[in-house]
Amino acid sequence: MIAFVLSMPNAGSWNGKWTGEGRLYARVKKLNKEEEARLNGKSFSYRWDDGWTACICCEKVDAKEAAKIRKKSVGFMGYEWMIDSIIKKGEIK
Image (cartoon, rainbow, N blue to C red):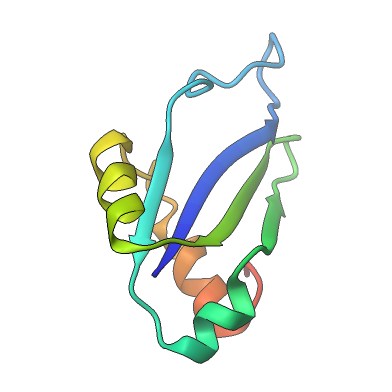
């Protein structure tokens, strides 16, 4: 299983902050061994023209850690499409 963890390292807001800071935005997906090996330990970023940047970090987790992440996560802010793009294309497009 791979945990996908979302952060916003560059916030284009008036105060330079992301309102989601300090919360866990994560999804866990069961992937095949090849996909896990390809994604484990990698980070992917996506930058919008307005200065915002999303970063998704991928990490292989076991079932126990996956359960903890699912329990603590507050969602993925509608950016699940980024996870799909990472899995299918190896980048966020």
